[in-house]
Amino acid sequence: PSPKCVVSRIHKMPDSKDSFKRLDHIEISPPIQHVQEEFTESARLTQTVLLESPDPLRRSFLKLYAILFVAYLCSATNGFDANTFGGLSAINTFDTYFGITPNNQDLVAALYVIGNVAGCLFAGPCADQYGRRAGMTIGSVICIIGAVMQATAHNLSALMGGRFILGVGAVLVQTAGPAYVVEMAYPRVDRRISSMFFLGTIVSTWLEYGLNFIPNTPQFTWRVPLAIQAVPSVIVLIFVWFIPETPRWYIAQGNIEKAKEILVKYHGDGNSDSTVVALELSEMQEVISAGGSDKRWWDFRTLFNSRSARYRTFLITCIAFFGQWDLPPTSYYFPLMAKTAGITHERTQLLLNALQTPIMMVAALFGLRWMDRIGRRKLLIASSTGMAMSVAIITACTAQQAGKPVVGAVGIAFVYVFLVVFAFAWTPAQSLYPTEVLTFNTRAKGLAFMNFLVNVASVFNTYVPPVAIARASWRFYIFYILWDALGAVVIYFTFVETKGRIWRRSNRYLRQAIRRRPAWKDEKSWCLGMKKIMRPAS
Image 1 (tube, one colour):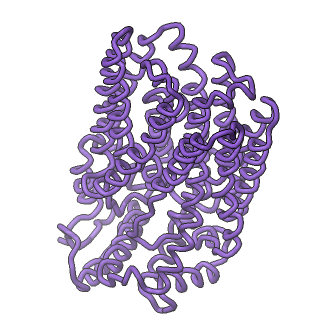
Image 2 (tube, one colour):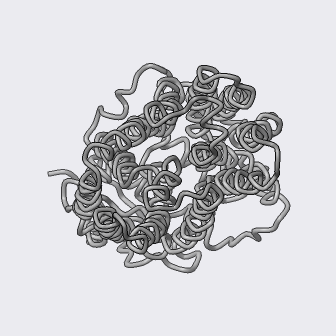
């Protein structure tokens, strides 16, 4: 039999420095040595951060916040397009100028997403090979080119080409930006990027609504929103040269000294003897050296070469598809949905389109707060259940709204209810959960793979609904009811909770936890799993 593993029993994380003495008293058996070392290192880091309790307004943190803001704007880039085109579809002069009809509207809308799919092929490798800053830089340049092409387009072909190019650039910054935030942020400090998505959507939708009041400027009302899509990318492109690369990427390249220099400057407040810096550096070296840095840009086998890797990939796949196939994208088709409900006035359609963004932002910010209290998994289950119920009511109203304006208005109201329920959990989870379940060595490629899946799902959800609704009418919405309900079931039985889990970086422990306990007993599986790994001294 293998030697016993002797560890002090830990019922909860102690609140004193004595915890380090207890964590140091460990004898490791060979089969679980890697798991125990990583658990101990992560526990030390977590407890050190709690004990030091650094001032969030200290000088080094203020610099760090400014650096992270640059990466946050990568999400705003995507947010600008998400609602810009939907609002433009309500402007008659825009449709007339480019000859956009119900027959080609779905293709024009989907070209941005098709560009996303194409960009996913090299977004991850670019961020891995050349760094997160390089991904943000190249993506921003491409986004600017696409936005300029759209804003200056004089025919439909130029507009469509600009949308495709913008989609390619957007996925590059969406892959590099969140990875940068996760790897650069101070431990246990919020690394939430999703709220910046709404910065772009709010500006774009309300700009379209406001410009509609300016008389005798038919082209001005839609060329300006198309041009402003380049603003976040311009800001990123200017300031990306003044921010450092992430320490984890430097360690992956073998440049330990540079990684330490960055950690000391921004996490240690200039103190080279900082305990947090020492533990962070040790943990990064441990995790990255355990798997090695992936230098093969074309090789995505790291996402599938082990059971835990496949499980992580399964989780981000679920996030991609259940987060997209929930309802036809209101960002593109909300004005059309309003028109179907009998609301035909152009400004009213633009107002309804603009209102959805701040409503979703408020819901997402509340969701971010509760996600750290309740947990990702529970909120996602509740959200998917609420989404299925909301779509069921929308479907019933759509089926009965002919000649009944009140019923149509109720249907529009429940679209907003759906958006609140969705944004409360799914909007923050789509940014947080994938970065939490992916390891460093698979993070960039994993995010790129997830973006690829998101955009494959989006192509379907952008291109198919207009055709399907025209043929099947309200019956097509039944698909979304069943899909949202299925999402709640899948999350209940398979998702693991990542809220505050110090084991989430450990491939081996995750694999053992998956074998021993189903995800729906996750709260107990963590404790039971650790008891099997850590046995009290005899």
